[in-house]
Image (cartoon, rainbow, N blue to C red; front, side):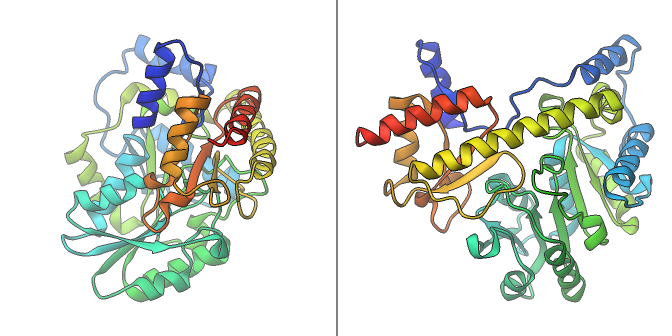
Length: 372
């Protein structure tokens, strides 16, 4: 966010900046969803909803799981939250106690460790790398567990790496959670933004997991702040009570608008946007490799590339600063995402269109050629 603030200062001074630092799709909310939101306001849907959410929306999400993944989910297990962030806070509140620890992959989404710390619990970073496709494996998790471990939190597709957990990995983590009597939270907010085949679904592979999703990424409703969580049946009253106390309920107009996400018209828009993201990945991945960035594997989801800069420099924060100030390209250094080797990595978000990505690549090439 500091980089974004500086980028906006530069833009205010007349400089052109290509934004590759923030994980927000560059598309506006789809027209059918916006229209549904306007109708909701016009129809007076502005009061509180039940803490668990609009019943019709919970049913629609259950239908989404049935159609996309072939999995039957009782709509009562689906609770609507103020963004996936709200769901993650509730999940941590249910699973942790002060002083206990939560296993998190390193690198990973930076806010996750703050959600853990908010509950006076301890985030325990578990190093993952290219050898494990940047995913937390059952073997790594088992080795990191101790008597104070309360839960594991993983993301698939992951941020910042765009990698996917396999079905066997999710099943193994689910089995480990049962054996250790700890919680498993699977963040699936980038589901739908997958480019090389359907990702494994945690509700199939680890039925007792808490699964978190969002309307922000695939559905493009970032500013509406709407997400959901799927909890085991016994956890429904606990989750509902926490939502009531922490948030009362998620936004009423946003929930009515989100109903339109599951219409044929909207899904056609989302799928065309997914294809656009795939094309951007397929352009940017080889282009960055040609410039000397090392990106292992083939990141198959989200809209991020996590690049090793070892061949190009010693400090990713310095490189990110130089690219912004001298080349007009905003990217995010590894310091946001990991504690093990942050100076070695940059995250590139391909949330802007391919022409702008090409501009960024040209600017980076000139910057590197000039010895920047």
